[in-house]
Length: 543
Image (cartoon, rainbow, N blue to C red):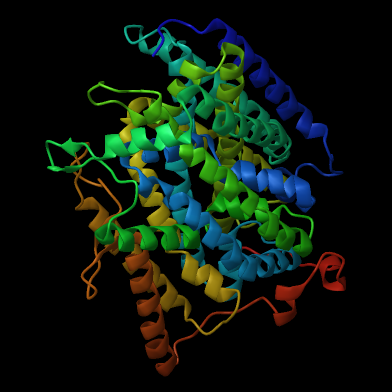
């Protein structure tokens, strides 16, 4: 690792950062609405994004700076297990193609801004809606923090921040500045800012990855040498565990855990508030369906991105360093082998790749708080203008919380909580997705199933230790009955579903009131331009 500031790379990085800052503020004038003080405008971009804007927005939303850093880092550290993100994104799109258009339609007809709005309207349950909203906020917070971790990795490799012996303010000043810019243009422009910046971010990411997988192997002696180097490393025996440090191919015992993690992650992907926000901002149902068909192009990019972990091994990144932080593998690979100017381009891709999702995540969390906590329980008479003001303030608080989280806690805690976030958000799947197709489930049964899934999953994760932490040290444990190691989140999801089914049968037999469904069957297939959209009612705070 080079020491001191990489001036050329830093200048290129700063230039791109200034470019996206300007775009972020100009976005407030892009597709300007007649009434900007409405949550549909600030929080959903006026529900006006076409196919390509939505594609870039969702790509920028899901394939983040942490993806850029963490996926190759996992491959660098463990080998084949790190590739789980590739099959899960492949599995996800056919699944969501089935139900996301229905969610878009009912949200457009009824004026829903969040998935919790839909749950409130479908089941007539404030408690279930609150559970979905709070789960979304809870799962999103560590995700935002990890985007700042991605920026930190780049800043550390660039050599700025005052060094390890500087006082905390000087050391973290660049991160403060990045945070301040992000907060300012998100507050000003809402969802339009990350939508516009996503064009720059995604183009940079594609360019950097394509160049990396072609140019870097030429520097390293070809892919044959790269895979030989990786196999040699993973064949090394860990003296603490007396097991190989990794594997080029997952062994039989690890394959069930790999498969369940991929399936559970695929089910959870579009339950996150920020991905749903990107979908609801689309102009039409057709736009959503087209995007589910073309978004797998990002899965190809993700596979190429994962290969960078092997390239880092072949380049000798971190070799011989005790306790090496694998999340620095990609930044240090770029700094070691790319020309300085292109290192700046690559670091800009990672840095901007943090700003786009962090902005969308903070907006999505603010929408949830405003619609499903503030308006539902605190001020039911809030006007659209007041909702927008509260959402803007909430988005700032969310970012401040994420920044404090990164600065005040160990990064491993942020990683562990993000893993928990995937487990938690998966527990909202039954209430949301089942509700898009049937009203059979009882609202109290769904709430009980959610609670069982949350408690069981959190408890099991708490019991797992690792060399880095005593608790929350992993996401796989023995599956009851089956007796094999599998993803805790998927096990919790199955328990959630079983409880919801059994209690629904019991509560229906007891004739327990089911709540009022304010939706109609036609709502789920409505397209932009249909007559019912012209008279779409706004959701109310209480029935």
